[in-house]
Length: 453
Ligand SMILES: [Fe+2]
Image 1 (cartoon, rainbow, N blue to C red):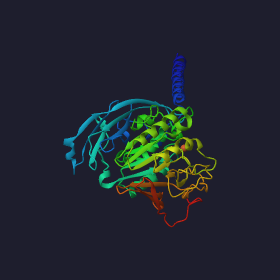
Image 2 (image 1 turned 45 degrees about the vertical axis):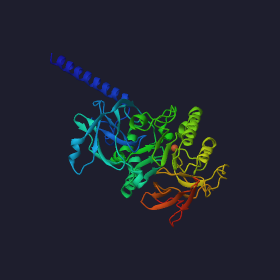
Image 3 (image 1 turned 30 degrees about the horizontal axis):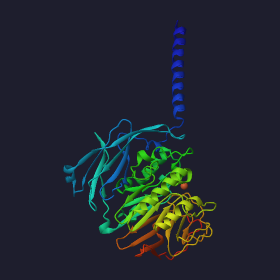
Image 4 (image 1 turned 90 degrees about the horizontal axis):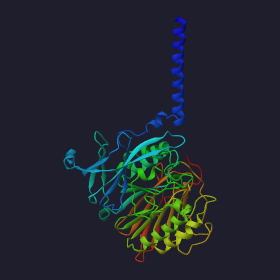
């Protein structure tokens, strides 16, 4: 009898054990990967994370905000007020419900991650004033973030331009972004020229990008254009892009939040979607027609365009001839001042006139035309060629750029290395005919063309 009970007990535990092993292995095959301690910090919770301000299409009156929660919190609200010396603003708080959308994403190296993304626009704001806001719902809120509205009529416009972050975003891009902010905190917005991360749908890479920026993302509005790494092999835009950003919807149909414009009184900022220009003849043509139309009816003094793929490459075996064929005539026709690009993981800039339409090895930089810039913020580096279109270049160097557009007809551009030193600078002085006179202000240091870790 005793032996019989022992056998039954043994069988019972064997069955339970086998069931347990089956359940664990089944769960693992569902998720395939285990989440390490670092990536666990990128999982959503009821407390809002990935809080970011974006430029709205009315940048002196409103600002767009976006954040994320776990599926346990489906609702979102934004609260805001004009800043006060202490907590007095709490009596003046306005509340607005967010548009909340469910997102389920999966990458081969991530488990399936389900979350809610919340988008809202903070409106009825005034130029030059300071405001506070927080996001959340019920018991779970972010801290109060404080931001300043731009005031171009008083202080012009100042912004950062970052090339590709893409790799080592947590470990290394964070240093560059924070260095830029610490040295130049008085900026109105940041511009990211594409390839923010490496694998378009890898949610932990997006977690690194948001983590590296932290409160800077939540207090300095940004605009971004997608690069090829924001697209999958099937030419699908990153599933996170539109849920996690809240960018203008004023571009051609089919390019929402990737091709758009932001109009300040004296500066028009434009994002063109380079990947769709390269891959979709239809959306390329739509962007050509849209760009021509918005620049034809524009009387602003300055036009700045960001596009991921460069008109003129800095890298060997790269030449975007088709981009030049369709868009260079528009740069010349509308006297576009500045084109901010990425993709080539090097630094190069040059002013190219309307008469320069040859091969990339023939095009000469000159004293008039549009200023084209390629830059990189991350640690993936390619050698920069010696081409006649470039007036200053750098290889193997992490950089950020500070751009100021004054009310006195001067655009000043400064490029800094990751250690905070000035590497390149120039000014564009606007003439009465709309043409710019360039004044180089290059510091007296040689070009960095070899590895300088
Ligand atoms: Fe790229």
